[in-house]
Length: 224
Ligand code: PRP
Image 1 (cartoon, helix red, strand yellow):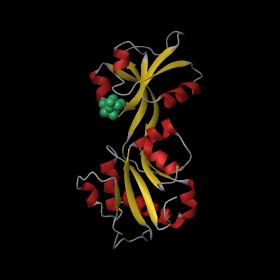
Image 2 (image 1 turned 180 degrees about the horizontal axis):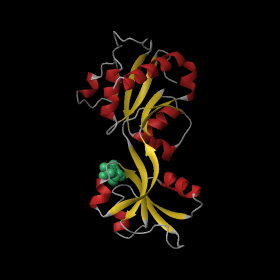
Image 3 (image 1 turned 45 degrees about the vertical axis):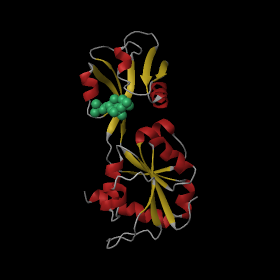
């Protein structure tokens, strides 16, 4: 675990980064060093001043990591908290607390394929291409349907177009990628947004600090 007087938070680099920094800023933290475009990966934030709510006594450290690694660092206790998408949580799983839905980074997992086709027609085993095999397996096992899953690393929309798969399970945000490639959503799989996760031991050992920080974040979300 990290030292008692530090709360180390792993943030997902990229899409969620900007909104997470905005939220921390609205919670009273000065995040300007992270916006300086430096290649540093660990930052110590100055203690907030003049906040209406009690501030954590522990100093806050931010770590920038890839989504799946955020979960790894939190599970192993080298980070106390993390901000990561529900998509990664659903795919990777793990044991940690999921304490807060931050409401941004909203999109969904959906089953999609060529426009106008009836996915459920006939009895053959469907082939599903996806970057998220665990999410896909869980979705079809709930339906008691056997499918063959093929793992694709990106631009999954290609798979039905190239006739590799009958459909895809992928992230849909605006729907533009599907539309521009003649595909459509057959069924929603699950809603996605950014979540706060907390290491199980940290929650016990650093409860007051973590709760104070959570309250600051909640207040900033409400004030929006
Ligand atoms: C994601 C997702 C879709 C696209 C959906 O891909 O896999 O392809 O965004 O967004 P839209 O509904 O707004 O069009 P990403 O950009 O992360 O790249 P990837 O395809 O290489 O994974």
